[in-house]
Image (cartoon, rainbow, N blue to C red; front, top):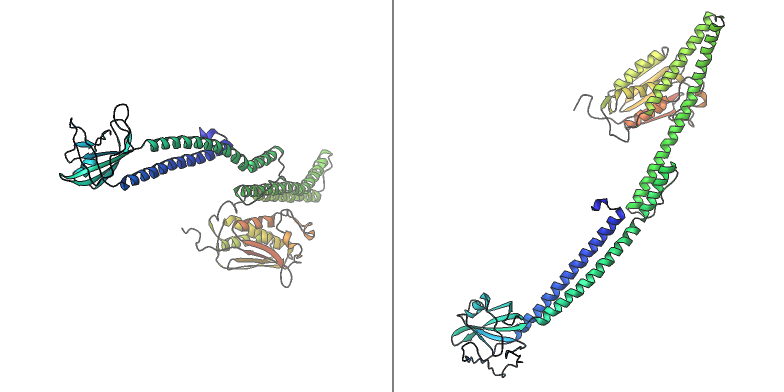
Length: 473
């Protein structure tokens, strides 16, 4: 039932319940402590009364009573209508055989087993509650005293009427105070819940506004360093990440549209020209027709490469969501990438020097990343130049002998669709190095381009190694 209540009501209920339990517990403890203290005082007052130094027992005519006389004189009594006495205290003697002698005018208090044990010398004293023949609640103290017959129990009892009445009044008072306290606790619980959930209300308003308007620029005001502040900070970080992701997505779509427009326009122009020549029965010369077809094929390849690159960049990023995947042989990926690059730059010489190195990642993705670095080197290097590929201690370097990279362009070369002024006339989509950066990041490494000493560009890729080779457990 409580699970279906609103959070505010549950918080108020829990607060009120906790305070109510504390108040009730304190009231009960107060009542018992007061009772124990009053009973302790009563017991001490009973123990403080010495037994009479001289006791003369005079059996009544019916054999049921006794007369107490001591050096201090007779006990003061107040006779009621039944000629019995309601005295401040009641005294009686219990003999070992269990017979009782009660002072005149007093009601008899039936002895308990503890009293009999005292009368028989088995115990020195006993304390207990009892009810006399008149129904009065009494506190009874039994003490062993010597007698001509041996040991007897001298019993001194006092009524607990005043204590019982005081405890009753105290219970009523504590009940009233507890009721007021519980009511106050409920009110306090409502106020506390309202104050505690006020930041949550603001949080909810902002979230509902974002859900309604999709305005990711809206942030939650964060105050303090408590859990609500941490939640607000985390939510603001999440909306900032969503905003950045949406901006990257919009930029990717815009850049992809821009990159697709040029080859598509060229394809449409070339195909229109071919169709127009056929429709007008004015065939193009074979050389021109072959040139147009080669252009169409090149543009289709460029479009296919761009689509593949876009699909690669569109897949979910695994660098943050999962630890490293399998174990890949980086040296094998480098060697395979070099063999594929030789087919694309047949006049380029590749100088390869690699040593075994195993990393966390997918070998096919690493091979594609290395191939993109090699394609970049082939593109910017001289047609008949050399490309130096070296792998040592987890660092792969690829150097070309082209014009080199402008240091001002180095921070931007791994962004999607970014191309330097000198590269805009060259074929390519501007996504190759972005794919390299993504793949390296997923394997926990770093990559960068820098001017090479003596001219050219040096690509430097570092990946942390692993002790396990592929296929090992």
